[in-house]
Image (cartoon, rainbow, N blue to C red; front, side):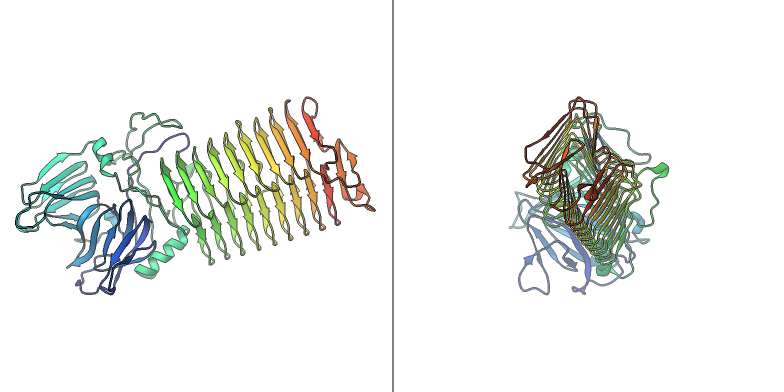
Length: 619
């Protein structure tokens, strides 16, 4: 996805132990046969047990004989039996039923797409899509079926045209009024059509036509829980002890730059028969828990991939809790030229859950896209989070967070050891109402084995925070190699550069800040460092290391009170009666000041240490 606009046909691949179509009669209307995985807009369900149709909701169960209807500008996706995903377009109606040994979707109006995993079909098992004048038997296919009312019906009987477009696999189409006739064989990249009882036609399906087939079938995934929780939810509904697995099959791509130049399609994967379909029904890709990491230290495909899409999720995009475990070998999100609007956190891990990423790629990759959310990541309740590479890598995007980038609390643990910055902003324009990092209530972050900074800004990136860049409190503990690095970029902080209180501790092996190649660090209404409540900071390198020339550090506040003491070009404040050298032990806090600018407003303190806190800088 990096630097490429991916245009791919998507096939849902699912594995759940129980079969959707066990050889049963169709009389059990209380039996669960599926779950709603996406609901964009409005839809209703008419059910045998309900006196009137009721609104359909995200994650609702779907029962035998349910009749689902979508309103205008609405899309619904239903996971049926763990082996078929049905996408229902606006102004469509379908009913889920059964015949002997066959699962049946009756389409009475509109348009649907279906993806079926052949590997999970039992011998002789078939899923059918039925319209008034066609029966499509499916054993492992990606297809789209349209039912179009036609004028000219006699005696008040409606007349329909059924259009069936096969993207992948083989479909047998029969005449419901002549079941003894041989079925038509419709293969990959073919379209079958029939009006009323007229003879059917079969024609090739071109790539442009195949792309048009999916118009109206696009909607962002609305999986509000993490993969492990989603799997648990689905399997509990469909049969205990089942395992759900899903992954994208994306055999076709279009090479493009950041904006997409519509280059020629690339060669499909070996054996692939599907074309490159722009934004085919997008579904989450849930990696198998037993899947090994990619060879050579690479990364598996992203679980959620967006290209040129608008995604709206009112809650957290991904959540993991209740002691569950997730170990992805690839990114959670890859987005290109998309808009992601998330009401809460992008990722939320809590309740003693364990998340351990093994892939050598950024967990959240935007290239470029617009993201709004409360936070990128929230850890709480004893959660443990382990990461190999970056948490976020954004190139040329726009980020707006209503809180902090990262929030750790209530005994949670974050461990990272990658060679890339945890938050890597490349030419990005980012803002946060909070800061970069908030750690509290005994939470711990350990990045001491990481060779990159917590934050990296490069290529004219700009970040503005509404509070301190990093805020540690309540016994929090953080170990870093470096806090922040700016290269030809700007960082504006409304608050302290670093704030420690309540016995919090931070250890930085290298420099606290590196400012390079004409960068600007502005700290307004705060100090570079503010420590209180017996907290402690140890920095092995410099507090500020200027690289090259033309860089600027500006600090403004009114924290000097009755006066500050100068230490190494920096005004520092400690309470009356406390020896400065007891609270602040610095050897060489600023490196390479020549050719760079240090602006500290009158009456402003660069370092504030109170309440028995201590700062140590230098070897």
